[in-house]
Length: 279
Image (cartoon, rainbow, N blue to C red; front, top):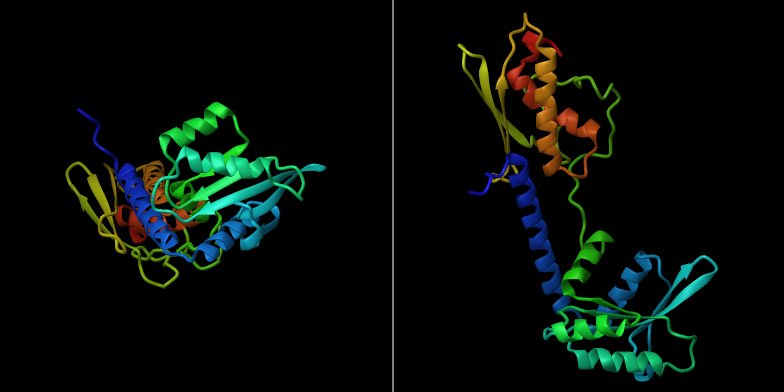
């Protein structure tokens, strides 16, 4: 029987599902782009990847080559030519063989060191095998890899801001100056979590649940035993804080430890109220 997913695993799975949805939307958009605009986009991507002298070739004189670029390594450079195809059908071995022929017949320019074939679709198994078996200096970028590269280099996508561009002016290891039921707000000023806690008076056991308001499928859950204020509660409170921060890190991977800790204290104070336990 498979091991049940932890809350952190569920959060990570939900985030990955959201990213996969963005990839799908991005590929659908690419499939509808004007072919020339698509070539320009690939050139811009290469520039983001530190290629130099990137350009789209003239259509009437490209000889099967859609773009040229170079990659500088020390005192040398890798001369690169590319073919860019906005196709729906898979690219077969014959198309790659024709592209390789264009690479070797490339006249009037410096020697070609690398061929780059980019498509919105995919490469057939025979096509991929032909390149691997031939050990050719050719890089294949299919639609899935292209979407990942565009996301990685910030083209056609944008990150959703979660916080204003501020840093805390207090000790990161100390609780921020927030009231017990407050939390660090989002960029829109709205609260992101609704915290609920159930405590057994006899044993001190508690279950803390934090519902993530922008997405009802995400939540934080922590369990433990609450130490009374007259006891040595600080290690237990610190452990609870660590647990909340670890789960929040899956929801907000872009936040550093300081901001995660600040946001997590609103949950910790639900179990250890500041007016009883202090800040």
